[in-house]
Length: 379
Image (cartoon, rainbow, N blue to C red; front, top):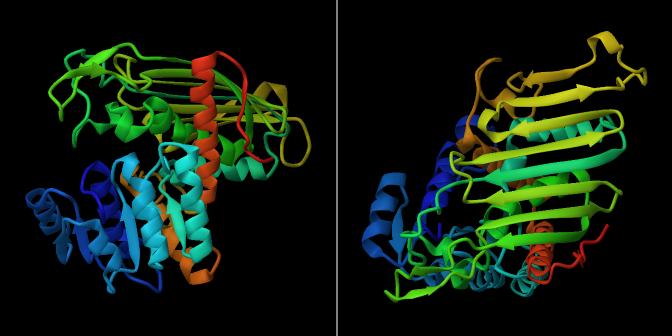
């Protein structure tokens, strides 16, 4: 485990609980936790049960008793660590976004594919059972031809002008470390989910805004220009002819993590809200039999995604009882390990994440130019 912050905790919990819920041939052994701050990483390792600590990630890569490297560090470090791990023959899990730019991400994809190592990017929202069920309903043809995709991710934690940028805790506000703001941090999740459900995004036009133009920097102590996007709106075209509307901001007062989507098709619609993650809303216009639903009973249906036949839920509790955010990481890890055991590696892998990176980069470019930009994502 390289990194010990919020994601380090979420991933460590998944490693510890995986075999409690999923019958797998392999069991995770927490060998080493790595970070630059020796005191803090020692406390992290002691709390989560790692056997030892390191402050140099290169020693982790070289360790013969390490099979999997999990990258939970700021975005500017992903490329160097991932490429070195791939060359050392390690399996790799990496936090999103894959990198700061497409130029950084492409060599990462090349490295893991050349080495033939299993790899996955932690777009964990795919593993929310309700979202996985939405994917199932779409694949079953229950929404028919898609027309519209709407998605947002709203937070409110950077409104204060007194909040600094940079350093261990606030690197997401430092463009040198993060690469971008809400586009790479929040919209990357929405874009990944959207393309998983509805196919490639081919063109975008965007508006980005940085509301607080300058902030003090934790590392330099100086007031410096803010280079990230605080908010982003974009519309897009999908390869299947449908249209998309996306919004993300850290300035939506009152919202801590409002992540939603709605997909409308000729035969039905699906909608999801992370604040009620145990539910999937489904509108059925045409039934699976091919018959149109009777008008007097036609309407939105709220599915409580807790039954054993729902994705992942047979591994947890009895029907009616819910799971939480932390279980999405357990589900993702279970899929990753099952992929290793079956030889059919799971997604999203580095190449999938590269497609999301291409869309993010096109959005940022359009935000600067005000023009439509092709993403380069293949249909």
